Length: 104
Image (cartoon, rainbow, N blue to C red):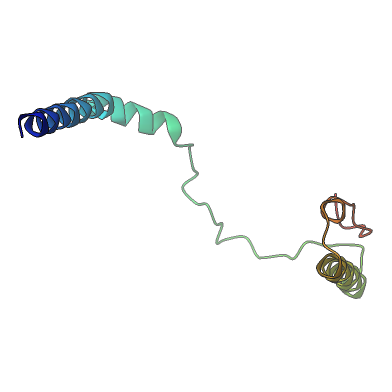
């Protein structure tokens, strides 16, 4: 019984010391917090979204159908790669390069 009480006292003492150390490590004054917040936040303009300027879509020399065709081809190639991995899973098939031109 005495050994159990001794272990219990040591555990409570260790918990108290841990709580004190954690409290001391995380405590900061109000001025420190304000300076850290001021340093970490970037300066944002007052009008992030400009309401006065009319919205213009970016002009691209590529027709929309061509872009959609490239995306569909990319999806088909990725789907085929996933099917081939399901049919024969291996470590090499995970690291092979895709044939899609959209991958960087």
